[in-house]
Amino acid sequence: MARPKSPFVWILLAVGGACALCCTGTLGLMALGLFAGDDSATPGAPGAVPRGHGDPGEPGGFAFDAPQGWKTQADGRFILEWDERGDTLGVEALRLPAVPGLDDAEGKLARMWQERVGADWNDVKPNPLVMRRFMANGARAFFTAAVVRAKNVDRSFRVSLYLVESGDRLEPLVFIQSFMSPPGSAGEHMSASFSWNTSYARVEEALKGVRGSPVGLPLVDDPEVVGHFIHSNGTTAQWVNTFTGSTTMTAVSYSAEYTFSPGHIFQYKYAGASGQVGAMKFGSEDDQGTWSVKHDVLTVAGAKRTRRFLIIGAARTPEGKRTLYLMPEHPGWSLAPGAIGQNGELYVAAD
Image (cartoon, one colour):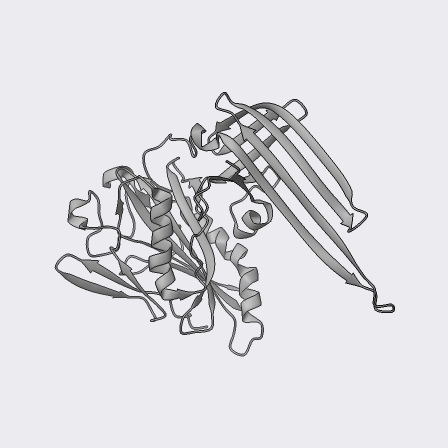
């Protein structure tokens, strides 16, 4: 099967001229260098050509070693394609120009997402949820991802944008997951939605080859954890008796609150309700104890039980409120899209 056309034509703006780097198609345009400023003044900046393989000797210690089997393109991209039960799945990766400074990484990522990705794709939501993680050698990275639509073809792609801390700058990496069914196949959009977790495994393989610096910084600082945070959720369903026409409604709702003090003491409150409206059952729980953060795990050791959370974010809402994005401990701790969507809990500061 012929390879689907790439969703980007990357145009790199450089001092003294512009260099157009074409992929295998023209589904979008992205102006690079928007945040890089004068690349010549940035240590380790890429200049007028996207870089491919890095090596540990690069200034700032950044490196990206693509896994075996990925094809290296002349313009610095890496591409992997494979057949999955008759469908073609693919992942592309490339580096963008470095962004000077480590400050406000979440803000820089959000702006880059909106101004670069949002300009060239449909269905790009503003104010993306920025997440955090460690790279292979313990350097920090900030990232976001979403399913978007190509502007001139009716196809979906999943785009991930990473900013990796490296010396005195942030190194951007873009991963593009693609899906294509054979001509004439029905339900391609639905099939594509089921493919993201499959192709995301290849993204994780590539991320094992990413290294940055500095190494050893915490994923979140203690002051980011301190505060009063609330997570709540709820759903309702309405039922119709086809014989009598009568309706009933059932609902499930709950809220969980954590108050983390500067002295590493926490208080926890939970309240929930479920059942048929008008005859719902209610429950509550409370606990207190100590909290600590080690690597990317938040542990709350209470008098009644100990809970552990994988930390996957500490961004701010569009209204400016602090958040903690946590994934409760379970057997399949994973940053795959489905795992985050199913298990991630966004706690928003109440103060």
